[in-house]
Amino acid sequence: MRKRYLPGRLSKMLVALGIIIVFVTMACAPAAAPTATPTKAPAVAPIRAAPPPRPAEPPKPAAPAATPAAASPTPKPATLKFGGLQTASEAGIYVAIERGYFKEQGITMELTNFRTIAELIAPLGTGQIDLTAMPLSVPLLTAADRGVEFKIVADKAQGKPGWEYCQILLRKDLADSGQVKSPADLKGTKVAIPSPAAQGDMVVQMMAEEAGLKPGDIDIVVLPFAESAAGLGNKAISAAFSCEPFITTAVQQGFAVRWIPNSKFYGGVVETSNVIFGSTLLKDQDLARRWMIAYLKGNRDYTKAFTTKEGREDIVNIIVKYTSVKDVKLYDLMQMPYQDPNGVMDRKSMDLQYKWYQSKGLYTGKKTLDEMIDLSYLDYATQKLGKQ
Image: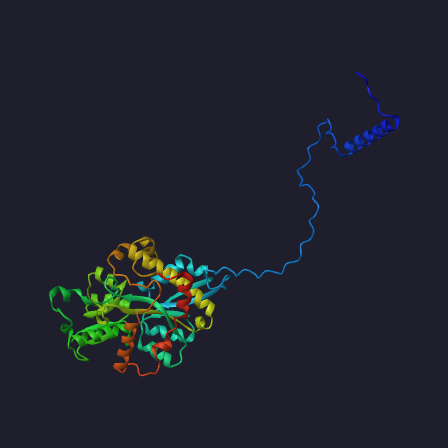
């Protein structure tokens, strides 16, 4: 075959173009890996060119803080003094202490025990105690008229069927012999009440009136709860208004029998005790709210234990620690106080009590129940914890 050759000038141009293509290809090709094994360097993210700056965005509003379980996210430490009567109805407070609910709220509780309701009024007015618990009574109503600063803020205990922790006790020998078969048979005898012009006094007088007894037909004497069992035992009295754990003490010692529950005189449900705030808490809303949250938690634990039996043993051990009845077996024999899990008071029975004091001329002041009750702390606590 005949070979064809390009003209000389064109041939030279093509050679030059080929050389240029070779150099360009070599410049663009990646460098060959070295044959020696390199020392391994620490892993470092490759340096990348910074992206162009984004235009500034307006600041976003701060997200709302999560609602805390307590009244304050950082509770201010406080010590509060509670004046009580060492009854089973104070169980909610005892439980809140032992389970650390007050501690969660930065509160240290100090307990001071008194013998009668009347003894609680003066310390509340002078600030010796910061809060207390008691039934509606003439001494309390009168204190309000005198300008003592306090508010009734929550339920502490109620009596109703199955929860009759306050009753009229009858001396056992009088019951066994049949000497006293009905309240009318108490004529000419002594009946003890823990405080004058308070719920025990009211119940005994209601009992006497229903039995057709006239004022003076029975001799009403004042005897603190802790002393009523001894009064029945030595036959100084024939009957007594008492509350747990003192009822079970008297029954187990063989001095008395349970006779008439006090809820009988109030249509089946009676508010037997209320939580009452003094000036210290009324002047510090945050502290008062925190106290109520802790109390309501302890209150609910107690009520749950005695309705579902869940955790009952632990709750009984707490009550044993703070009250005079140390035998845990006796709590199987007691009727415990009902404590509303939302702290709601039985206003109907409270109105009845208030009107009874007025009708007997025992309270002639101008203060109304509405003026003495403040449910704002309770409302706050139930909102935080939810209702049950």
